[in-house]
Amino acid sequence: MFSTSTQCKNWMFNSEDELNKLREAANLKHIQAYGRHINEAARFEFFLTAEEEKIMVKRYEIRLRDFCKRFQPPMTRCVIGTAFHYFKRFYIHNSVMNHHPKEIMVTCIYLACKVEEFNVSIQQFVANLKGDREKATDIILNNELLLMEQLNFQLSIHNPFRPVEGLLIDIKTRCALNDPERLRPGTEHFLERAFLTDVVLLYSPSQVALAAVLHAASKLQENLDSYVTDTLFGVEGSGKLAELIEAVRAIRSIVKMVDATPDKNQQKLLDKKLEKCRNPENNPDSEIYKKRMQALLDEDDDLYHRISTRTDSLDNSALGMSVGGSPEVA
Image 1 (spheres, rainbow, N blue to C red):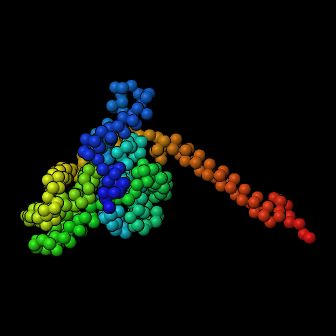
Image 2: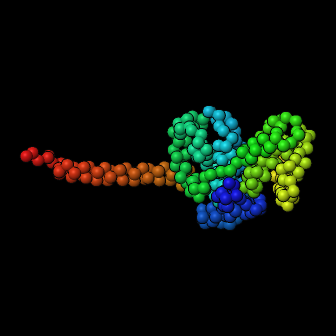
Image 3: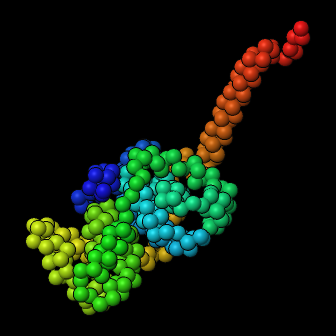
């Protein structure tokens, strides 16, 4: 149940203002950690602002959507929804200057494939990417544990897709609406746009689902008000009706404001700024990152050698042999 889930307890927020304050804190934390050598006046020019970070995250959410749409084999909706949740959660407490959204995006999608049991190998996954696929594989696998840690290993996601199906079945059963399947295209379009906003961090899946269905109905000039008030809630649920109506209105208002066509010139400027200010320790193209990865590989090789040597020694001892010697013959 959503009400007892970690999503409800730990990843739902009271307002967009609360989310923005958390993102601003992540931005400030990064600047304080890596901008000590830069004077106060120059920091604004060198580092991304919290608002600029938000613009970049929104842009990569659009890329996440488009990548999932093109993916082969075709992805299920739950994988896409779960990937969106992971991506949004990660950048509540992390700066894009520390972890590039391009790398976190593909890691979120790959992890969502696993969690939602959409079975693709890492080779199948990176086959959908352009460029150096071996490098992409390393980036995804190196970031996977980091991502899970930042999500506090709370990976189970309640998406609005199942509540939508429940509502459509209920409308078919208890509502006089002609051909409720007509609502599906508008509902799906609404949900697609909703994932480009913060509504999934602010409202329950069932509230988002109801907002989507009511939006689709209004586009068809159908009225489901009596279904909601009389059938869905009835007398027993009338006390919660005002709160629900307010939530649905707020969701529809937020989704209506989505701008899915970002300014390309602004994108280029932000990309250049990010390349200058991103943390080199987490940049796969930097020498610092390469040296750190090589050191980890060398450490793994040393550990493997020590374990192998120890194992050989124990095996030989168990056979009554000394290392480098021959067994005694009676």
